[in-house]
Image (cartoon, rainbow, N blue to C red):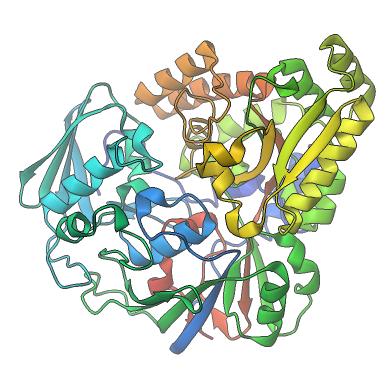
Amino acid sequence: MQMRRERFLWPTLAVGAAFAVAAIGSGSAAARGQMSSRKAAAASLQINTPAARKSVSSVTWGLYRDVNSVDPIFGFDYPENTVDSALCDALFRQTPSGGSAPGLALKVTSPNPTTDVFTLRPGVKFWDGHPLTSADVVYSLQRAASAKVGGFYSAIFNRVKSISATGKLEVTLKLTQPDEWLLGELSSLPGMIIEKSFAQKAGTKYGTMGVGGMCTGPYMIKSWTAKNGLIAVKNPHYWDESIHPLVSQYVFKGFSDTAMTSGLETGAIGITYSTDPTILAALQHSSKLSVTRGSSYVTDALIVASQKGPLGNVKVRQALTMALNRAAYIKATYLGGAQMPNTLANPGTWGGYEPSIFQSAYKALPSYNPPQIAAAKKLIQQAGATGKTITIGMSNQITQIQNAATTVEDAAAAIGLNVKLKTFPAATWIDVFTSAKARAGLDAFFVNSYPDYGAPEAQYQQFVLPGGSLNYSGFNDPQITKLLDRSRSTANAAARARLVVQAQTLIMQQLPWIPLSAPDTVLVTQKNLTGAPASFSYMYAPWAAVKLGGR
């Protein structure tokens, strides 16, 4: 695939992100900042599991809750991302090692810095047999870019001036400024293509349980009910003839922690990428299961949701950050399978480009370990915040969030702050992210956040830029915004990375979010299943058709 200049010639994780990611039991080594220990720990991380050889009739894929939508532009959490990636193709593919490959677009050429011309793959069909055309791509991208439609990704198109069909299999994007982030985003959910005629007929019900969707991916919806979950079967029209899926049917269904544990132990659940690593305590020594850790994009953090309360004061944010006992939290919650969060972007995101620049910057930042209680108390006193209360949203049905809440409560109490917890059931926890009404009255809430592709700025732009999809507090630092805007327009990869690093230094001073940990990816499968990637690519790539099967 021809890429403009060098911007998305992504290296593999073996020479990119993987060398800096901690593995099982390595949390304390990361906390001590011992780079040699991190390198040794990274050796045990996996990109893929062994290749599958046998066909399997049906696999139940365990999610932490049921799927709400199969509309890619409303995919905002693990269940939707996981399912959308099995059902829908994007313009470009993300690979397990952190690279990119052609998807529905064979190539992109750029006759000038503000024009991208996409050549589409011929012979592609939707599940209903209708051919993919440039009209479908234009419709999908314009819909993703539309603030009126209300999807979660319109901000990434804010440098796109026009999207037009310039041929039956050609789409041209005109930009207001050069955009070195856009192609990465189009390898993710905002770049997934849906059928125009089907979506127009469905209207606002597109992607819902009663209507479903229409994509070109390797699996298609067979049925979708509240009782049985979403059942997907092989797409007989799939364009990639090199792919021969070994799993005939997937059942995507949500389970509580208890039900997930028992389902994996009994074999009723075949695979899960655990969003709550605490269940591993009951699973990692099972003779029936395989547990694999890999590189991750995930940042585990406390979102500052309002600038009006105590957390609106940067000294309070800094004090709480200094007081957290992250080593104990990582040990209890992730069984050591996470690292100290020197930044608010997981080192797994370094795989996109210039990892050595990001590594050096990471090492230069404080790790906040061990907790600095005395210094934090002084900051609280200087801020005049002693005895003030922070209201934090959490789910008492998600063990990892319970652990995080306890960690924050303990830190707050140690430095003179009070914490009030507002609880939400797991099934409606997503509402905190999508509904201002659900967030009303909250000073903060917990998140496991991840970018759309492997680059630190892809994480930061979500919550530090005005209008970012996760910028709930209205955080706005003009200098940070200026640096990230400059990086977005900078073609040279090293220069772009240095601008991101400068912004990152300011972000870690201002702390619009409070970092808790940088978790690994955790894959759990039955011993008779193999082939799944251990890296975070499972969230974005149609690997289920390529990889998973029997041993």
